[in-house]
Length: 174
Length: 117
Image (cartoon, rainbow over all chains, first blue to last red; front, side, top):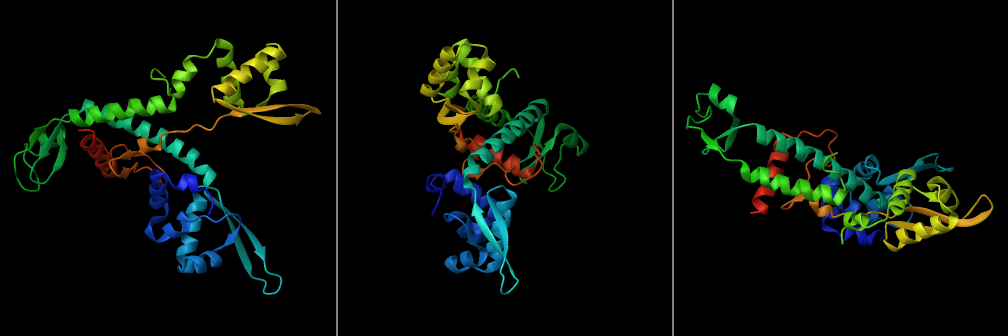
């Protein structure tokens, strides 16, 4: 098996699982050295061919696998020969870190510039304007809406934002 | 020491060299010192300092008929666990668009706050 170092990282395992789902995981978790056909993988892993193909195409869409087509001279059938490119995983995850940072910055701004009200029975949160429209009563159960302190959320986001900036070397003023 | 701390300790010339290598994605040493407008000896010293700081990688290469080095940025060893909140991975993975107010991201942020208590 190739890329064992990367595959030992629990975040990378989670990442692959997120992409291909539980049925595709046997394919994603055991990338072979060199080229392999979908049929070979299905046989080795004892999986349905469709499940193998589905996982391979998801990996392909995420730049983690590529294929070349070869025509069998006797049968005229096309064979897909797949190569795994897990060396692209660190790069993919780096760009996910930038995307997460953007989202956290936007969300922190939203949390800081709005007031929120909570129905403690239904656990539904409303912005101030919505809560006012409902007369500060939950539209689902009629319970009174309570003002909600979101400073814990804001602080947690602030910490993660600065950790991400530090790790990615993002200029704070930039 | 973190990467940014190491970088803060570089001299001005070393900084310019690192920037050049990162911007080009990789450059031959024989072009490196010319681009930086320093002597070849100084260029070589800058490259050596950056290799020692593990900020770049240097490989022998033949370029325009001469043996030189190819200088490229070192792959950054990032802490991917910053994508996690508790046992939940960033919900934007595999998604084309980022919606900072999506329910999935709300859940992620809640996890983050709960986890850091």
